[in-house]
Amino acid sequence: MKDIRAIRGMHDILPRESNYWTALENKLFRVARQYGYQEIRFPVVEYAELFSRSIGENTDIVEKEMYLFTDRSGDRLALRPEGTACCIRAGIEHGLFYNQIQRLFYHGPMFRHERPQRGRYRQFHQFGIEAYGFMGPDIDLELMLLAQKMWQDLGVDHEVVLQINTLGNIESRLKYRQCLVEYFQRNYDVLDEDSQRRLQSNPLRILDSKNPSLREVINAAPRLFSYLDETAQRHFDKLINMLEQAGIAYVINPNLVRGLDYYNLTVFEWVIREQNGLAQNAVCAGGHYDTLVADMGGKAIPAIGFAIGMERLMLLVAKELLTVKAKVVYLVALGEQAIVTAMHIADRIRTSGDTVVLVNCNGGNLGVQLKRADRSEADIALILGTEELAKGEIMIKYLRDDRPQLSVKIDNIIDFI
RNA sequence: GUGGGCGUAGCUCAAUAGGUAGAGCUCCAGAUUGUGAUUCUGGCUGUCGUGGGUUCGAUUCCCAUCGCUCACCCCA
Image (tube, rainbow, N blue to C red; front, side, top):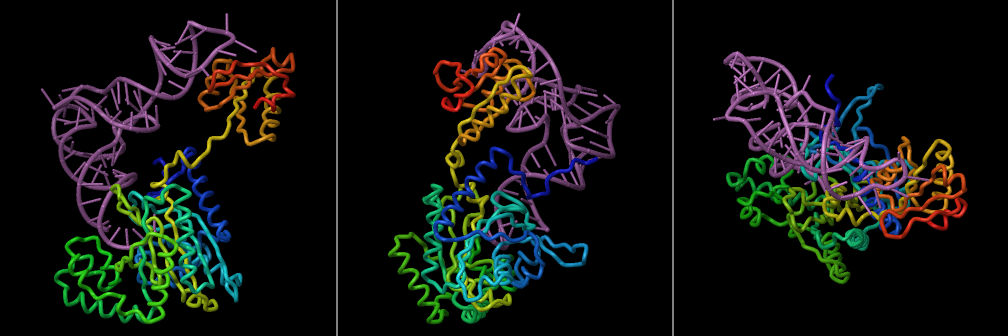
C-alpha cells in the first residue's frame, strides 16, 4: 500500500515547533486583549456562497483556490479561505452588530489551493483583528498602533514597514477603474501577458505588478487620489495627520491594492523590509470594509480589520527568544516498589508549582535513567532507589551545576526544587 | 495553472566515468554490575521516491510518474 502522507501544502507542527507556535499565539492574544479585543471562534467549514458573496465572485481565491465540496446532504461547502467573512456571518447571526460596537480577534487555519512555496501554504494560519461600528480614522490608528505593539513585543518592529493607501468609496473606485482600463488599453502593447489578463479580471492589480519593465507605464497611469471624493480625502488626510502625531513610520503606496473586493477607504500592509529571498513580503494586511456587513444581510455598520500571516511572521521572529524554558525535574525510580512512590512524589511537585516533572518509565539501571534525565534537558534528577525508599529519603542530583548531590526526607522534597 | 532545482539510513549529507552503498548525528550495548553530560570500543537501520526502457548487469544512463522545494501567478 502506498504510504499515506500529509496533503500537499499542509504541514504537521512537531513538538519543538509547536512550542514556538503556542508562544507566538499567546503574545498576540495578550496584546489584543490589552486593547480590549475579545476572541471569537467560528467553524472551519461554511457554505461556499458565504465566500463567493463577500470576497468577490471574480477573485482568484474564489475562482480557483477554494476547497469546495458537497456534503452528504447535498450542500455546497467550503473550507474557509479567510476569516472576515466568517466573522461577519457569525456576528450577524448572533446580533453582535445590532446597534453595537465590537472589538474581536480570531485565529486559526485557513485553506487555499495554491501552489505552495516559502511563506505560502494550502493550510496556513491567520490571526485576525476585527472592529465593527467604528467610522475611523481613529479606529484605523488604533489598529495600526495595535499591530505595531505586536511587532514590538515580538522584537520584529525593525523588520517590517507600514504601507498605506486609500481606495476611496466604491463609486469613485469604479469611476477610477474605468479610466484606468481605458489608459491601459491605450498602452496595451506595453503590458505583459499577466497584466493584459488582469485588465479583464482586476485592473487595479496591474499597479501592483512586480515586472520592472512596466514601471514606466504604471507610474504614468492615472492616480486614484485624483478621483477621491471629499469624505475619503478627509478620512485619509486625518489618518496621515494622526500617524504623524503618533510617531508611526509609514509609506504611502498608491499602488497598494488589496486582492479582495470588499475593501474601501484605508487599506494597509505591513511588509518585510529585507526580503531575504522571500517572495511573499506581506506579513499583515487589512483595511476598511464598511459596506460588507450590510452586503451580507446585516444592519449597515462600518468595519475594519487586518489579518496576520502566522507562517510569515514566524519566519521573522527569533524563535528561541519566544519561549521560556520551564524547570524540569527527572525522577529516577529504581525497582518496582519505587515507581508508584515516584509517581506520587512527582504529582506533589507538579501541584506546588510550574515545574515539569518526568517520571522514568521503561525501567533501566541508574546509568540508563540518568542518561535519559540528561537527554530530557532536566535541571535536577531525583533518585528514588531501594536504599532511599527504606530511609524515607530521596536523592537530589543537580545536572546543570556543581552543587553536590544530597539526600533529603521525601516529605521535604518541595523545599529543594 | 506555468517554469527551475532536488529525491540515497529516523535526521544532515557523501559515493559509484554502469559491478546492488557509506559518514556524522540519533539510538542500543559495553569499558564504568547505584551516578548522566566528555572519551573509547562494538552494534542496529536502507525495496538508493515509484514504474518502465537500454544493458550480461542500473542507485548511476534514458523516458514517464509521484513527491518535495523555489520562483511566477495570486495572496496572509
